[in-house]
Image (tube, rainbow, N blue to C red; front, side, top):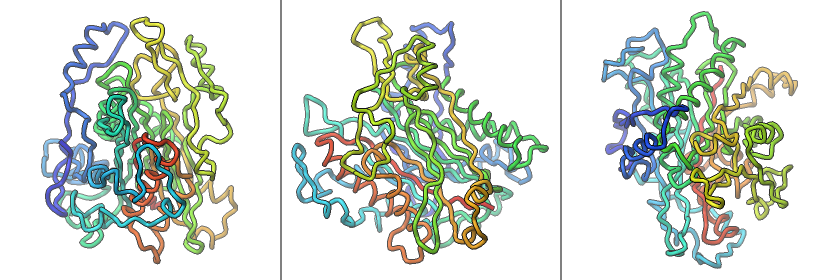
Length: 489
């Protein structure tokens, strides 16, 4: 069942469901892999993770607190993890997005697309109101619409997107936990580290892989961060950059080795980490989901995207070289506009074909394989033999370097506020990132805003829904969007 919270403002502990790991090696047989798959609970991952939960002592990053490192203290609190407030598809029937909805012939007007929808979230206290009231962050999802040939008017495919925002308490003991939650607004008070990410599944069991990653990655990353802490490694130093980069790579490879499907299913993984102090943020990515770092101008109320991770597409030179060296083949469609990559301001031209990694069928059938739209992913074990890898690119973004490169004046520095956005391609295939950033920035920082960050996410997802119907008819991808302030110090 869905992870939910039953009482307003009452967070219950994160109900982490552990699956027994079976790392795959050269000695692993197909029979062992099949036995592993049979151990996956039948409904595992069929319902998205939603709601907000406390994280136990094993997630406490500070080693100088009463809670730090004591995994046996069940009352200790290491932080809070926020999954999407809701899956909008459970609250919003397909036929209420527009009065002119027509499954096979929908054409919206620009007025339809740009209208402000009455919120279905405000006043609907489904998963506690900590997220609903927050001015610092929000996260929301909507299951796609993927009709089957036998039932073209219905979609039973699960939401394969998973996402989360985790705040880890710093220098905060368990006795002060209640004071860490604001009495109004639901936002954590005091210094926190931030880990957030988007994990978009693909393949018949992609929801199993993305579900597994969303549960495992926060635990593995945090464990490695605590165990690897070197007192001589100062936050912000080049040594710390190397340290976080290696932790991300190790965590991604470990969760990949443990994923349960071990076949033709996988997920993207785009994550951001901010240690709670300093001027650097770290972005790790495999696949074609997107994490953005954005600057908001307090004077103009406009947002500027200053960093996006690279999407791993098979046609990119270094990716194609690796794939070819492994004996793999890349398909590049004639219509591919390599210079665009989804950033056009023309919404009607944004959905486009992708280059693809051709994956042979494990059984040797000549026409039974896959054509993956990415060159790196978590999972997709069948594609590893033709060059797909799970090691992430890790970008180090430095606020100080940005200001130096821009030659920012003291007034410009004071005018800037910062935030991070994670989203699946179901959003950016139809809405330009700049438009997403502008509305989210105003919801986070503008004194004149009329919507909360959660309502802004809802508006964008519902607009994306209309645009998908306009461009793709009966099909809509899963859409997920998360945003959090970045409070550099």
